[in-house]
Length: 247
Length: 247
DNA sequence: GATCATAGTCGTCTGCCTGACGATAAAAAG
DNA sequence: CTTTTTATCGTCAGGCAGACGACTATGATC
Image 1 (cartoon, rainbow over the protein chains, first blue to last red):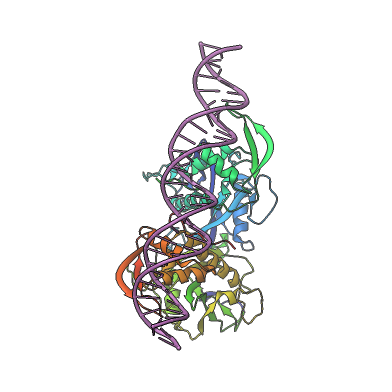
Image 2: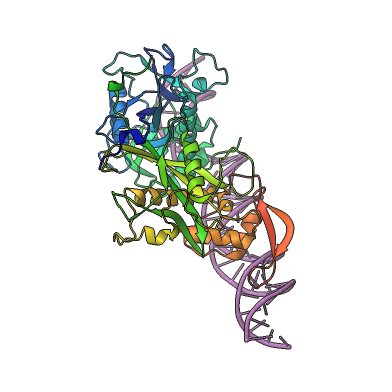
């Protein structure tokens, strides 16, 4: 018994991606330049229509691969490698959010290591990393402010990431497969925008069972004493959590 | 420049509601009996189509009022009274989740005080409160298991509520405007399914600034020493959080 | 090569918070 | 009047975080 098509209004459903990484000590998001109206020439979050036969997370993973070449890593799926963390963020469906028609967008949050240079996908739109501080700056000049309600979506994604690294081991999603305690600390510092005490941070992360697993190797990056290398351990929740310094 | 309608597949968009309350020491959810196929006669979460001109939260609030007469209380909106807390939960869009057609459902979470007796709305479907323990019991017999993917949605909503009362003052949304420390403690015990030490709980909630505001009155409910009455204070986040006992 | 700068790692101390639990207070139930 | 029930106040020990000193191991500079 199919629905009577006149019984409900038709919607377009899209996925939008908040792809975050840490570049030169700053939290950065992936943005694409819009090639057509509305908001032509403005920066926007990557995204696109959900196809008729694919799920929401599936569509988000497909868009991510098309835009960046990154392989999404569902919380459940194995296959370590260079997968980025992907999770649903929230859904935005204000009737006026797209001037052309009624569009409901299911935003997803992606946390990725720095390495992948943004590569434009099949379509030739320009893609770049931008510091979230600039994208969300209070000056709403059209040169940097995002199209549609994407500034709001980005802000929600950043807040999700900021709070989630408190009580989960998700900060390791910003790091390469092997990393040092100092690199992990700089991730926290970049995402939270604060300075952390290296000694207390070291005690906390190495003392939490299952958070970090030493690989045995050491490394020297840019001067200073060589650091031990770690992989992310099996623990997903941090209990007690990492405390974000207030103000 | 309107979209070419053939450029994207049409979706139906609905809102589903996970309405939680605490009844006789147990966490309970609002369910309605389906009057038509598919899943005819089975219990399901309340919900309905989003209209062409309304937002998602707006649609959720409308459905909530239609099903229960409760007035939703957006996180931002004032107007205390008997408003229930409403927030977006997650969006479910598996291509197969509705056998009739492609439906994307934006689930919302509602936390309400006990009082409101469920009243069937305009449509005459039967509505009732059911303990979430029964609805989510491992026995998947069709007498109690929910229609569609609503068991999964309910489980996600319950988990959201359980974790959110840890670090926010949201547990007060389950209480009437004035309540005692003991009543608030029984909310935590029902939602978490654990027993809490009354003395440590009292110290914690009365010692957190802005969590509880004494109204001056006292009350005697069912024997025992009269208890002080409180209102919910302005604080929304609990720092440090209320700790959920492990296992 | 000595010295300095840089980054990593180990310890110590103090204060705050929590869990465990004793004790008291004020009502209803018997 | 005694028991039961619920509320509230105190005490104490252990755990953890913030502040910060000390030591280690490398590259950079003179």
